[in-house]
Length: 159
Image 1 (tube, helix red, strand yellow):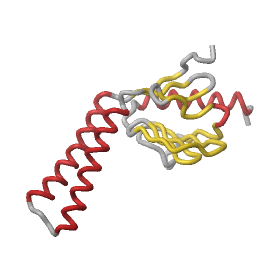
Image 2 (tube, helix red, strand yellow):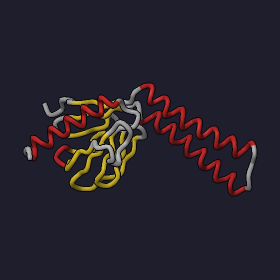
Image 3 (cartoon, helix red, strand yellow):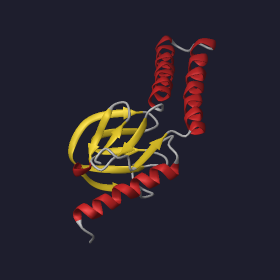
Image 4 (cartoon, one colour):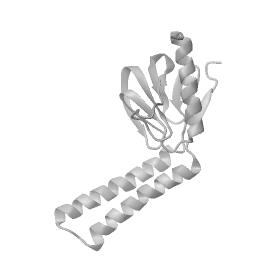
């Protein structure tokens, strides 16, 4: 019963491909400028580096967005990478307008820091903060954030 999936967040197909296409387009433009009208050598190297990073990020997003996030009664997990955070370690869930969160997403603050992680378009973790969202559908992230908030209320008691 602990492994029952309560909520799922997946990449929206249109948002996923738009994000990948935009990153690939940026890579193409920067590399085009680097080779079509070559600036000084240092600038050309810089532009090639930026183009390569944009292309690498597009590929990482393509791979990462095939996964999905699953919320169970004990953890929030990535279907590929495994556990992101145990529910007992969550301190707060923030969906506010001014929260430093991904598009269509929410921010989780944990009680103790964890290892850094990044799945472009789905989630990231830096220290005690976990951002969920990006190319995910808004209704799925909202449902997951609500389920997490309800879990926190039940665990900590209503104020």
